[in-house]
Length: 607
Image (cartoon, rainbow, N blue to C red; front, side, top):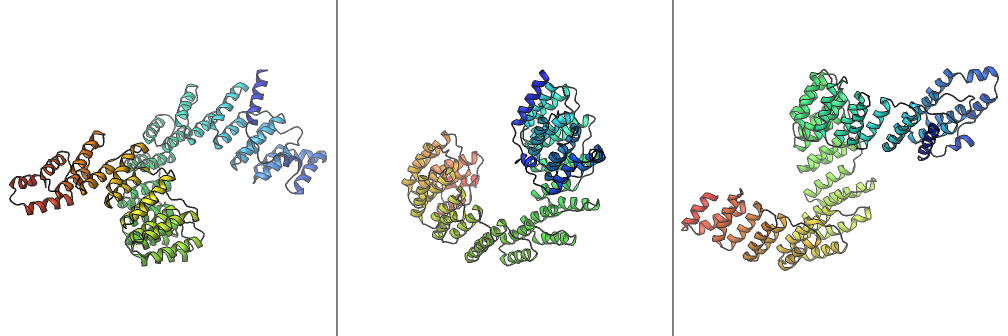
């Protein structure tokens, strides 16, 4: 009775999951060829010898193994296996289910198991392992525990595969802590963790960023009878590189090689990418030579990392050499490599060369993407050739590529820096026609551009519009507004806005205070500026070199030498030094007041 209840629980669990699109169609309305159904009819009504031949288990299993599509598998299940009398054993059904799972049709497999149950076929441990595997692939690993519980109720003993599948599922979903607890529980139950168990947990730990624990788990793995392999080592090496611990990754690589574990192309790619990210291209080149000596040929990812690094370092000629090598080896550059070269030329204002690379990639049949076009647009904007930039935007749209927010930000910034802020503002309002909404950086660019071009009223009006839209503008946008207001002589408006910041839930930072102190100094309100500086420290916002320099500059411009001396000394005591502007003002004062010996002596200590 207890076991019957357990099977009922099992059926209710299966009912929780949906079936594949419409399994009944395979029963009532065969969707395949007439031949499929006629074969089934022959099976039912054939002679004794035909039946004996058709029902041969060896032939049945061979037919299952030769199935190549999920439709063929479903047709075989409903038109062949379900109609057999007696029904095939559960092991034969498991073989079919395993093939369907390999085709990645996990929901379909669960539906077929549910149908098997309705036919009276009782699942064994392998069937339930398939269910757990499917649940894990469907990101329902938690239900895998329910199936595990039912296995005990039914009287089936879970295998190491059962538990490993759940461990891996938990790790894939990011529940590594729970996976670790399960692995420990497994050991307490007498199940010895396998290389697969360790590999799944190490992979999970690396994905959640706990590389140090992954390394400890690797050591634990090596203390057991389980042998570590190149996949485990490569996983940790990749994680270390992503954590910017490239030297540690190289040490682990040496340890792996010392144990006779040969690196793969993926191992080398992880290390080369990590080295290139930190400009260590000489070491990356050494690894490239090493892997080729071992007969491991680099792929496009290997070359991409090295070319991109050379381009970012401005070593365009070296990047071209690498591209020449890869072409010689029969590896065609991809869009990423071409774009890296284009971007490198654009950064050097070599637009003629950038366009040559652009034309070459198109000639080679490599279609440019949004990043490619954005790099070129940025290059033309840098040299203030806005017509070329707009032409490229049009070409990009005509080729079916919608500019993203980065593209629009580049254009808006380019127009602002070219002294055309109203055209930039028009672009700002054009974005939505192309399905893009401005982000905070867009807002910052247009507001800053309007202020820099002395379109103060337009900037303030646009900002008020942002506020009415209840946008979460952030302190960066407010800093731009405060700086613009102070620079345009609207100090009272700036002070009013500054006083409202706490009520808006914004944390005033050192940049905000420095802007206001500078604004007050420019208006000669030195006492107010000093009060704000003191208030700044009382509010737990420590002064930095910018704050000190801004205030000292304000004091020097108003010839307040006493307070200038005081704050120069404080600045020095706190480990900060005078910047170029402060130094220039000090030298200017000293030149005009050579008789001030006390100040001269003080300057010799400070500057």
